[in-house]
Length: 389
Image (cartoon, helix red, strand yellow):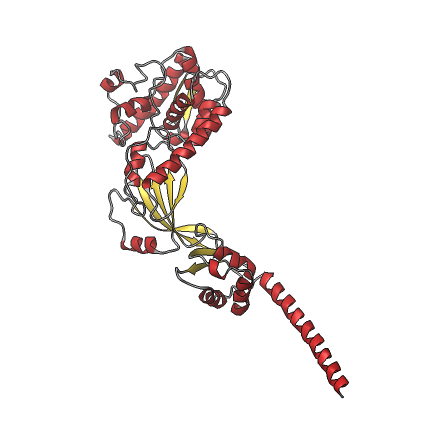
């Protein structure tokens, strides 16, 4: 009898082990396999939340098949204490394992609201955008000019959301004074900037920032980025350029930046100035004169006067020989690379092709050709003026 009982108990234990093993294999497969989510979602994880609330939210949105298994998997992988607050994009058919990784890895939020502080040459704007997880693209919610408009009431709600991302988009050709002025208007940053950074040494780019970051730290990141870009471009420069230092290259790049917004034109525009430097010709470029008038503090907002074109200043390249003493704006990578790797051309002149700056320039190797191109441009101006009168 005892032998029969022992035999039955052993059989039961064997079956139980097989059942537990099978359940464990099923659970592991379920945890790691494709999830039921048919469309990407934006998962909000509030500060102070926990895996219980997150798992219930995910189950309610149809992203996981079992909230209990989701929590057990997070516990088994020692991630229960690593939950991060924020807004996270959960892609379609993400496994429970992948979702646990998404909400515990940290870093910037990947979904939800994004506030972009755009610092442009002529104006600055604040843009609030929301990511549409299904489409995978941002849609504008609101936009305003902080210099002339009061922030809409909703703006405070967006900036107060724990999942909101903040980004500063610095355009090519902005001056350092403008950067300092506009950073001072960004209310999610803190602290003061001691002095205006040297002109040209801030890299135009997109910078992710966090609420409470110091303005000086943002300036430092911009400066470090520009130093790295310039060092790389200088290392890979063409041989025989009439540029004695990276600083001179940065100055030329800033002139190229202000003369054209067309990426494809920059190496050709750079070649004109390189050719002029090699021949000992004056650069004769309006943007340098404008910088001498404004000192980089805002936009001139009018045409140059003849007296300004004749006045001897360090930035008047109609009067001085060679380059001005400093850059006249913060050039982007493309302009820096163009200044150090210009096109091979014999052009010495260029003038706008049409009245629309986006149409680029027409280039000339001789003064006669240039005068003909200038005459054509003046004719376009005359026709426009006649239509407006």
